Amino acid sequence: MEENIKNRVILVLAILAVIFLAGTTRSCSTSKRLKSTLMELNKEKSVSWDSQQQINELKRQKAALEKTLEEAKAESEATKKLLQQEQSVSQGLKDELEKETKLKEALESDLKEALIKDKPKSKK
Image 1: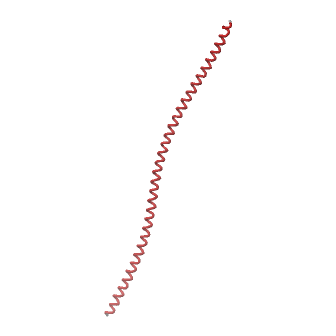
Image 2: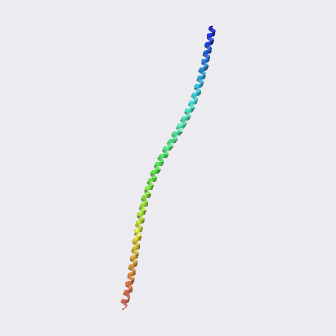
Image 3: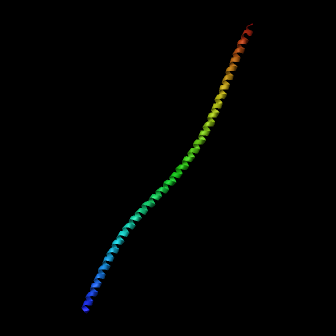
Protein backbone atom coordinates (compact mmCIF):
# COMPACT_ATOMS: atom_id res chain seq x y z
CA MET A 1 0.00 0.00 0.00
CA GLU A 2 2.90 2.25 0.67
CA GLU A 3 3.90 1.72 -2.92
CA ASN A 4 0.40 2.75 -3.97
CA ILE A 5 0.60 5.94 -1.90
CA LYS A 6 4.03 6.71 -3.33
CA ASN A 7 2.67 6.25 -6.85
CA ARG A 8 -0.25 8.52 -6.09
CA VAL A 9 2.05 11.15 -4.57
CA ILE A 10 4.32 10.91 -7.62
CA LEU A 11 1.30 11.18 -9.90
CA VAL A 12 -0.01 14.22 -7.98
CA LEU A 13 3.45 15.80 -8.02
CA ALA A 14 3.78 15.10 -11.77
CA ILE A 15 0.36 16.65 -12.41
CA LEU A 16 1.32 19.64 -10.25
CA ALA A 17 4.63 19.95 -12.13
CA VAL A 18 2.77 19.89 -15.47
CA ILE A 19 0.29 22.48 -14.16
CA PHE A 20 3.14 24.72 -12.90
CA LEU A 21 5.01 24.26 -16.19
CA ALA A 22 1.88 25.19 -18.15
CA GLY A 23 1.34 28.19 -15.85
CA THR A 24 4.94 29.29 -16.26
CA THR A 25 4.72 28.93 -20.05
CA ARG A 26 1.46 30.85 -20.11
CA SER A 27 2.94 33.53 -17.85
CA CYS A 28 5.98 33.91 -20.10
CA SER A 29 3.75 34.13 -23.16
CA THR A 30 1.56 36.76 -21.49
CA SER A 31 4.64 38.67 -20.37
CA LYS A 32 6.04 38.66 -23.90
CA ARG A 33 2.70 39.85 -25.33
CA LEU A 34 2.42 42.61 -22.70
CA LYS A 35 6.00 43.69 -23.35
CA SER A 36 5.27 43.89 -27.08
CA THR A 37 2.09 45.90 -26.39
CA LEU A 38 4.00 48.17 -24.04
CA MET A 39 6.65 48.80 -26.69
CA GLU A 40 3.95 49.66 -29.23
CA LEU A 41 2.32 52.02 -26.73
CA ASN A 42 5.67 53.67 -26.07
CA LYS A 43 6.18 54.14 -29.82
CA GLU A 44 2.70 55.64 -30.15
CA LYS A 45 3.38 57.87 -27.16
CA SER A 46 6.66 58.98 -28.71
CA VAL A 47 5.00 59.73 -32.05
CA SER A 48 2.20 61.57 -30.25
CA TRP A 49 4.75 63.59 -28.25
CA ASP A 50 6.68 64.50 -31.41
CA SER A 51 3.45 65.46 -33.16
CA GLN A 52 2.42 67.63 -30.22
CA GLN A 53 5.83 69.32 -30.25
CA GLN A 54 5.47 70.01 -33.98
CA ILE A 55 1.96 71.39 -33.41
CA ASN A 56 3.27 73.67 -30.67
CA GLU A 57 6.10 74.87 -32.90
CA LEU A 58 3.66 75.54 -35.74
CA LYS A 59 1.42 77.46 -33.34
CA ARG A 60 4.38 79.62 -32.30
CA GLN A 61 5.28 80.22 -35.94
CA LYS A 62 1.66 81.05 -36.74
CA ALA A 63 1.53 83.55 -33.88
CA ALA A 64 4.76 85.17 -35.09
CA LEU A 65 3.43 85.34 -38.65
CA GLU A 66 0.14 86.82 -37.46
CA LYS A 67 2.08 89.46 -35.50
CA THR A 68 4.18 90.23 -38.57
CA LEU A 69 1.02 90.43 -40.66
CA GLU A 70 -0.58 92.85 -38.20
CA GLU A 71 2.55 94.99 -38.24
CA ALA A 72 2.56 94.95 -42.04
CA LYS A 73 -1.12 95.93 -42.07
CA ALA A 74 -0.42 98.80 -39.68
CA GLU A 75 2.48 99.96 -41.85
CA SER A 76 0.29 99.65 -44.93
CA GLU A 77 -2.45 101.75 -43.31
CA ALA A 78 0.10 104.38 -42.27
CA THR A 79 1.50 104.42 -45.81
CA LYS A 80 -2.01 104.77 -47.25
CA LYS A 81 -2.75 107.70 -44.93
CA LEU A 82 0.55 109.33 -45.85
CA LEU A 83 -0.16 108.77 -49.55
CA GLN A 84 -3.62 110.28 -49.17
CA GLN A 85 -2.12 113.29 -47.40
CA GLU A 86 0.47 113.71 -50.13
CA GLN A 87 -2.21 113.35 -52.80
CA SER A 88 -4.26 115.98 -51.00
CA VAL A 89 -1.24 118.30 -50.81
CA SER A 90 -0.46 117.57 -54.46
CA GLN A 91 -4.04 118.33 -55.48
CA GLY A 92 -3.90 121.54 -53.42
CA LEU A 93 -0.68 122.54 -55.16
CA LYS A 94 -2.20 121.73 -58.57
CA ASP A 95 -5.22 123.88 -57.74
CA GLU A 96 -2.97 126.68 -56.54
CA LEU A 97 -0.84 126.39 -59.70
CA GLU A 98 -3.98 126.50 -61.81
CA LYS A 99 -5.13 129.66 -60.00
CA GLU A 100 -1.70 131.20 -60.44
CA THR A 101 -1.68 130.27 -64.13
CA LYS A 102 -5.11 131.86 -64.63
CA LEU A 103 -4.01 134.95 -62.73
CA LYS A 104 -0.82 135.13 -64.81
CA GLU A 105 -2.83 134.79 -68.02
CA ALA A 106 -5.23 137.48 -66.82
CA LEU A 107 -2.31 139.76 -65.95
CA GLU A 108 -0.65 139.10 -69.32
CA SER A 109 -3.93 139.84 -71.03
CA ASP A 110 -4.32 143.08 -69.02
CA LEU A 111 -0.71 144.00 -69.83
CA LYS A 112 -1.26 143.41 -73.55
CA GLU A 113 -4.40 145.52 -73.45
CA ALA A 114 -2.55 148.25 -71.59
CA LEU A 115 0.29 148.15 -74.10
CA ILE A 116 -2.14 148.25 -77.00
CA LYS A 117 -3.91 151.24 -75.45
CA ASP A 118 -0.57 152.90 -74.72
CA LYS A 119 0.79 152.56 -78.27
CA PRO A 120 -1.70 154.78 -79.99
CA LYS A 121 -1.21 157.45 -77.36
CA SER A 122 2.56 157.39 -77.71
CA LYS A 123 2.35 157.79 -81.54
CA LYS A 124 0.47 161.04 -81.21
